[in-house]
Image (tube, rainbow, N blue to C red; front, side, top):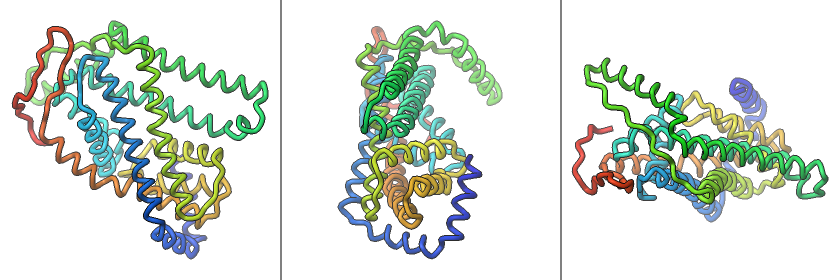
Length: 337
């Protein structure tokens, strides 16, 4: 899929180079006010992701500051933008930062897996909503209502399965043993003594909290999608909301499997191609894409690396489980990242 996107965007650049250069100039003249709105929406998207992680962590008895998790989200995005296969690199970085602050390894792994699953469910929800939005807004037929009901049922079932498994850590025993064996093998290769495995505690999150984290996952994507809407408006383009939601969701699916740092070329090419297929003129599509990437990617790198520098100073999380030792402000000797 990525090869098709890159090839299509390359043909588009060659055949429409004059118009695309003009569009780049238009992107540079985007109104400052709309750019500020776009940056604010991107900050909301990151804050929703951080709050989602904070609520999931609280269910394990680990209390973390929202500011720390927001810095972690920002920094992990910057790390992912700097390295090939950035999603894997940012996940490893987040895992290391969580465990350095006192989160048990199984808790850190569960947090990243659960937040990733919720993010995937939310993106799938946006894809289907985008595909059905025009019909749902015009005249809701019995078929539309049935599809919407089925969609809500599938999403609820996915979240329900995640909640059920999380509350019963015994069902994750096989995974826990595999993780321990892998960590023990790495420790022996380094000439170290394997650590005693830590089990995942039961996740104590009521149903309303699972509903809240699902909404936060949707807000994370929706706020970022609103950045694209503002970007289209900034260059004077026009696109129906139904088409915009579907185009955004499809472009994110294409960019969610990056091979290049920051999905460079993939993110831009997929979004341009999808917007053009949605009926946007090629110069407008490129101009809107450049404004969107400026607000959601390039201008986020500076605060991301600032957050990375801040996170080098470790402040342990607070463990609120009964009988757990709270590290407080104790000094922790950590090798620099």
